[in-house]
Length: 289
Image (tube, rainbow, N blue to C red; front, side, top):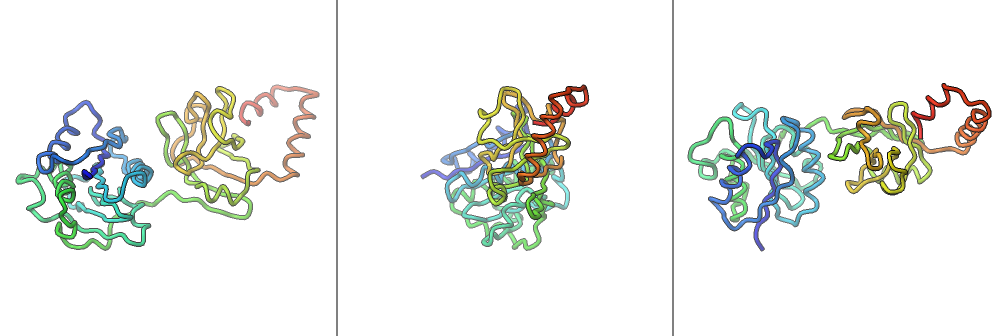
């Protein structure tokens, strides 16, 4: 079976940077299978790249090598590293890209310093091509990452978005906005299941219902669901939750159990208001579902 190398960058596709990265790998090991995870990470956005790698890597076979190049500190004193974790190898700058790897009990990391495993001439502005790509190609040939350099015991870790649980509720934040405008949160499936199926989700002043999938919502309506990344998502059917709700990364999200009392209260309010509709009620109904 051919070795698999994935690529995650903020290079875009307009310039030849991705091709140069691939060329550097194929010049050393032309038998590898290259997979582009994405090259559309927002420029210099290490957090977005880290979340992308964390989401994609588990779906690749054991032994996959992941090259990630979102590197605003290229050419400075920041280290290049290779991290082995969960049966995979991750190669890139030591700037927090591999934070999720360090949650694994078996992780180990080394610094990329051995000259024989990099390009003969290393540009200070393109370590992706001259350091990280050659290292990945050599791992695909069977080189043990331990040969690249000394052990790294203090890798850079991002302040990872977390959730806070308290009795009957979970507080989290929006951590990513995907291509469709869905808001991915720091709240995971396990925490949601612990609350049970009868919950409400608040984003800002909006109160949203939990559904099973996007199609359970009326067209244009917002709602919440647990998506394929096993994270709570805020979505708008056939629309953008980010645009409709005016929310971005860091926006607060609160999930709470819906009690019988609160349901009776909301029903009572709707009944009372329906007898005497006012402009203020229309404003409230437009900001809650």
